[in-house]
Length: 328
Image 1 (cartoon, rainbow, N blue to C red):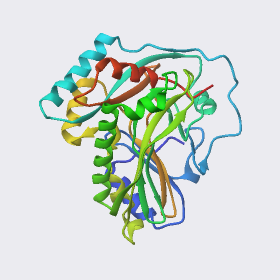
Image 2 (cartoon, rainbow, N blue to C red):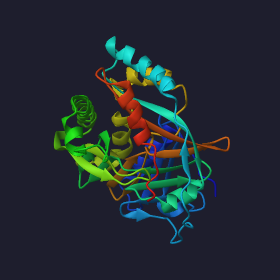
Image 3 (cartoon, helix red, strand yellow):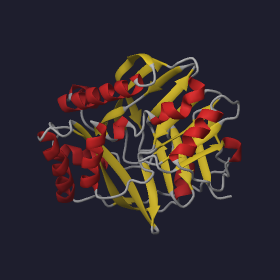
Image 4 (cartoon, helix red, strand yellow):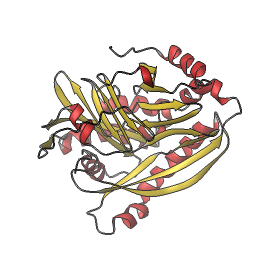
């Protein structure tokens, strides 16, 4: 059965109605949260969509046939990236934005299907939508557990091949400023729906294995207390967090207009969100580390945070480090 896409109004209505029930449901939306899939997990066809999230999975036991990986991305030229970077940077110097997530669309040659990539990859969140995209995201978006809402923005990346990589990443002034900005933005977003919002963990480091070697990424955990009747308002709570701050910037509306001009392409489902609600608990991810199919061609989409202090060459290198599959 084909997936049944709905609009935002109907999606919010389903969240609010189903949030008080006992039947787990899955949700997926695009970057601009215009298209939604909100369905009970037992109603999803594994022929159309596969997911593997912590505690929930509909992936078959089968394994894709292992073969030597052919991985050939075709990144933007440095000159082409610099042109996009300058659009963002000029706006920052003019005071229109102080953090922006600039992304790129990278043609890709790989000897695996989207479904095979899903089956072979290793990530905290994996998602495949037939003939559309595959995602292997390390970034938690919103988690709700026992009335506590938490968000985990991920900002800051470095290759483990860099000498003293962790120390270098944590000491980088630009990375520290970028992370502080996004934590403040997420704290503000959560404050619209929760009380007693605090930063529980700040700039903790995780190692991710990739086909290009390991990388380090920094994240933070921000959490707050939801109202007692939050299950009746799950849709409204989620909408108040969208789009994710980590993949837009600050201030959100103006920055989104700036990056739309700079990027020059439609993100589609890239940097959207997906998750599962189960009896008032929620776990969701940001759709990063993402490959989609357009007119028969595969594209990897990757991005990074830009501030007024950014060096475009370092940002360009970070884009290349994030262009990987977690297949080792």
